Length: 268
Image 1: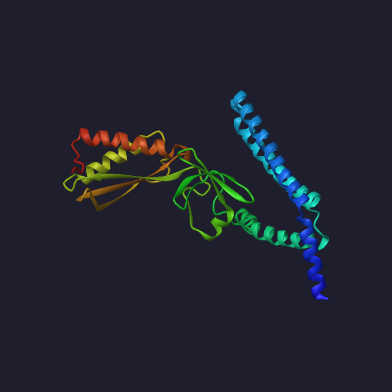
Image 2: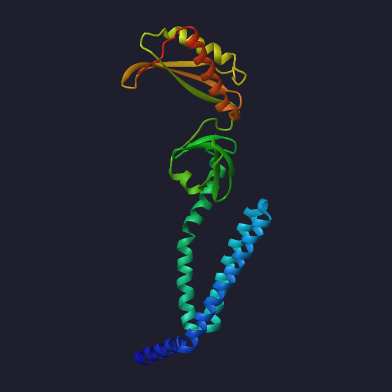
């Protein structure tokens, strides 16, 4: 009985791929490729005519090509090959298993999105550091978090990454945020004078949030193979959007005053 079933299955399989079916299948695949080629050519001309809409046209072209190949592939299998019912069930089961594996990461991100919604380790508008990427949280969706870097790049990160990896939030929902600025001085520099200069610059900056304290830390470090003093100024900016403007303001004005008042800096 098993031999008979095997013989029948082989006969049905060989009938699916007879000469006429193979010729029709090759012709149909070529036809699909030609239709897709004409679509891409049309979209290319459309982008040349409407350059301001090129991103939307590119997305539409990709969607049409994807739909064409998916629908065309199904039509070819069902209409041209006409496989037996048992074969379709087996293929459907395999496709379901493959789809389940493909959707595993998506499902993990969806669950992680719900966890982020209630746990709230960060929120929209926060400045965060994640895996060497630093920027502002622009959106938190059920599947991904979109982060805008200071170079104006949009980074999309799956929610599941935030559940297992370390993420640091600079302001955690607050408008103000600590900004740390480093200054390197020579070993013979007047550290107290330099600190007074930086403090004066910070408290007179239009970006400073003075309701929180200005603090300093001092340590010896090696710069260009020479020992020097690192003066680390810690102050708060009144709005996270002014973070780099605040840091630049402190650096430029402090450097100018160091030069005017003879505060030596490390040199080679």
